Image (cartoon, rainbow over all chains, first blue to last red; front, side):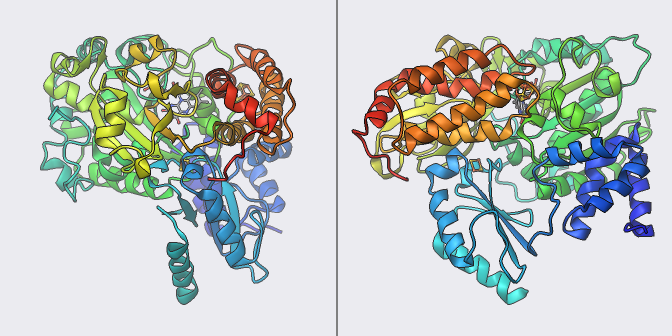
Amino acid sequence: MSILRDEDKDRIQGFCSIFPEKRSALLMILHYLQDNYSYVSDEIILELSEVLNIPATEMHNTFQFYTMLKKKKQGKYVIEVCATLSCSLMGSDHIIDYLENRLGIKSGETTQDGKFTLLKVECLGNCGKAPVMQINGKFYEELNENKIDKILKEIEDND
Amino acid sequence: MTEKIIMKYEDKKDLYTLSGYESTGGYDALKKAIDMKKDEIVEEVKRSTLRGRGGAGFATGLKWSFVPKDSGRPVYLCCNADESEPGTFKDKWIIWNNPHLLIEGILISSYALSVKHAFIYIRGEFREGSEILNKAIEEAQNKNYLGKNILGRNIDIEITVYRGAGAYVCGEETGLLESLEGKRGWPRIRPPFPATKGLYQSPTIINNVETLANIPYIILNGAVRFASIGTPNNGGTKLFCVSGRVNRPGVYELPLGTNLREIIENYAAGVKDGKKIKAVIPGGSSTPVLKFDEIDIPMDFDSLIKAGSALGSGGIIVLDEDTSMVRSLYNLSRFYAHESCGQCTPCREGTIWIMKILRRIYKGDGKPEDLDLLLDICSNIKFKTVCPFGDAAVIPVESFITKFRTEFEEAIKKTIIIPRQ
Ligand SMILES: Cc1cc2nc3c(=O)[nH]c(=O)nc-3n(C[C@H](O)[C@H](O)[C@H](O)COP(=O)(O)O)c2cc1C
Ligand code: SF4
Ligand code: FES
């Protein structure tokens, strides 16, 4: 049974055709699949390894190397707070504490209702706006408790 | 006011659009370049004294001249937009605010190096940035600045934006190449160097975003004018990123050789809450820390080496008098332990040991022999690894402990309390 739909397969072929060697398309494909399925399951990895002609164990090794690629279902909103030096100097520890309290989870966990996943991550390349976080890939900058309340409320209201 | 190259039109709101960019003279350099001989462009870049802005400061024109002319294989250009060195956020400014400048730089460089397919390897977290670049590429394509038969001149160049997926080591140029080939980003053993055997074993040039964004200016205004900005053999401006405990953190474009204290005090508006500077990391987390009395120095590649540090990526991190050096180093050690790719044993194991020892010092469980143990682990990593990551991971440890040893000793003796910041 194939998990990938026909349109996925078309997209995958499209990505492959961009490169002189089709394996190059791998990260593009994985980003695309993760965007559509929230995570990349073992079954998808196995199917991909056939499409791209890459041995399954090698596929796993490659997949596991990249921290942005997720093997487990993530919350609908993935909150990633930078914990590296420039953000830490501007209080990222407090930001993480505050979010843990607000959401009732520890970093690394997902809320019961499946809405939020909270993650501590390394430097996001936006240190001038510290402390920073991303939610589903969008930057939120110069954070404080008030701002976080507003951001979370906006998400709740629009959800 | 000295001349700016990259951020000259920073107040122009529509600079990121093609029409906005064109109204500032955008793509004029490309039009000029395609009337020049390819070798002439390489020579001009050599004469400009442009040095790589990604961290190592290697002469760009010289690097370009290593590409063999007769390999019979396609030549590739990879723009390094991984921007993963902690404290660095300048390429983000270019990508978000002046994407066409980068694209024009890539096109001119590609033409000069006979590249038909160029890649922008952008860190996965810059999702928005990759969308901005793709939009700009589409706009440029519609005006025939890129694609097939560029400006009717029988030149074909395509640009593909490739998103990484969260791995610092993919900023290292051979880790980048592996990742771009769809593999895990394990750096390659050199030689061979990418200029002869890079992407798909073909000649490949890897250049940083900021490096390539300087190319249009050099073509349009000439190498002499470019070299006249900055200091000898350190031509041009630099995008300095100031972060940490300052009043006005941000990206400041200033001539290479601008005084470090002046950047912090005049441009970043000094330290927060009127506090004093304790230490400054001058060029991203992998460059040796400077003490408060060592920062009256010109920020260029050669001066920083002379001062026992490095210009690196230009990521200036300011630590104030209240900042704990122990806590800061523990924070950085966690970064390196997390980001080691695991290929070489000394780096994989060593970075984890370093982090664990620093954690116990930070938590108040340090032992008197720990500092020497840390330095010993460092000497077992240094120069014993496949890529410069190992050396980079050691640099903060050695420089922090050497320059602030008393503070570490006090933490071990528990005579100080480390604030959580
Ligand atoms: C661990 C490590 C991380 C690096 N990260 C980056 C990066 O994020 N961006 C970058 O341009 N160069 C980075 N570099 C430097 C690249 O290896 C390479 O020297 C550079 O991209 C060359 O371009 P340039 O000559 O224009 O500076 C890194 C190097 C190392 C060892
Ligand atoms: S030095 Fe570290 S990051 Fe570089 S190849 Fe070796 S293990 Fe990987
Ligand atoms: S340290 Fe947080 S974005 Fe760089």
